[in-house]
Amino acid sequence: MTTLTTHGRYDYSAITNRPDYAWPGGKRLAVYIGLNLEHFAFGEGLGAELAPGGPQPDILNYAWRDYGNRVGAWRMRDMFDALEMPVSVLANSAMYDYAPDLMAAYQARGDEIVGHGRTNAERQSVLPEAEEAALIAEATEVLTRGNDGTPPKGWLSPWIAESHATPDLLKAAGYGYTLNWAMDDQPVWMRTKHGPLLSIPYPQEANDIPSIVARKDGGQAFADIVRENFDEMLEQSAQQPLVMGIALHPYLVGQPYRLRALRRVLQHICAHRSDIWLTRAGDIFDYCVTCDAILKPD
Image (tube, rainbow, N blue to C red; front, side, top):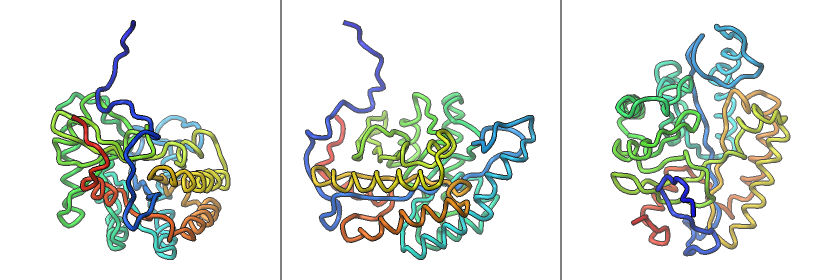
């Protein structure tokens, strides 16, 4: 019998066969916003594209992405304030140099700062292990200093890019959780060389990048995805406690017509505030550390 190569980070487990538990207040569905604040190199490197890129410098796509930091993220902050929604800010460390007032505005709300590499113009997965460790250390130092000395608890790699060593490097750097692995609707403890690292569900479907950029969905179509996903998971959570993340990028859903559709679906979610745990990814991590029903790996 052929044995397939495996990552060894976690074992197979059917969601229907796990110990039961509840989130704070007896809630069964935890919902968090993952807001990506990203900065890109001009004239080089990676970046999402509104239209197929031509020769560098690619003004159209660079400026379109920059709209998110200059306009979209500020409109979204006002929306989150009006809805009294907490946010997990997935921040490139380059944002502290490029748009420090934007970072300060979200920190003033009490939002969590999550590590999201240095810039989304690069992938950490292509680097030798020592260089990847240096990238994580550099981003962590900048994020910690910018956040009044509070280090990030969690990490999302730019482009969800990992080397074979990434979970080990994150744990060694002091991280408690990762958002890279989208294999479950519950948090899962993963094995690393330095102890357990929690995988918190981060969506690849209720996520505006694959929806709007890859599938070319309209703003309302993306909002419908979020709404249907929420309604279904709220029903499913009667059987198991679940986590629903909503992944947002201001240069996409911060565009006025998409923001309007997004606001409607977030109002729908907030109307169920008494039925859900509206929280931050870091708060989910803190709870999981103390919950014995979420088994850590051997």
